[in-house]
Amino acid sequence: MYSGRAHKVGANIDTDAIIPARFLVTTDTGELGANCMEGLEPGWIKRVSPGDFIVAGENFGCGSSREHAPLALLGAGVKVVLAKSFARIFYRNAFNMGLILLEIGDGTAAIGDGDRLEIDIDKGLIKNLAGGAEIPFQPVPASMKEILDQGGLVGYVRSRLDGQPA
Image 1 (cartoon, rainbow, N blue to C red):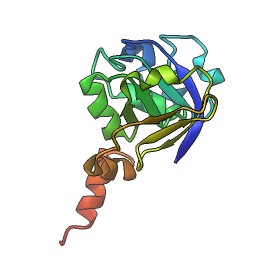
Image 2: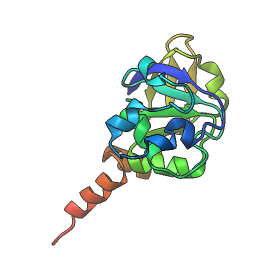
Image 3: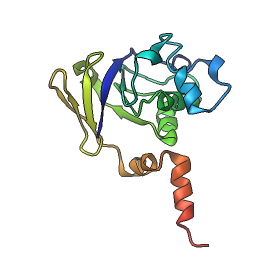
């Protein structure tokens, strides 16, 4: 179960808005997180608390395929991003880095900026504590959940290799 506040952003938010190129001199999630969303709203990180969510329109994460974007979101304390839809390469990169993405289509309309949410990824349900709406979504597939449970693809592969006979 995840809980936090919603931070709404628009459609077609690209990876350069999530983490501008001038900050790509590191892969340290803390440093990237400190500059998260600077391309969209300077100082955005100051109003975000660990565990908060981004709620976006269509095509979130479009643009370049940089892996820094999901790392910046994780470094900012965002564990889950909800959107009408995601750019495909960002979708895969995010899961590989351990960031949960949930496509909820028009369910984004039932969430206001600053609303408190509870998300159960196993049941496929978002509860908007501010307005009382319940938004169902397709639960994360078991194969993707395994990757997320290991903190991303590297952790997943490492755990699989550790379990192999010598």
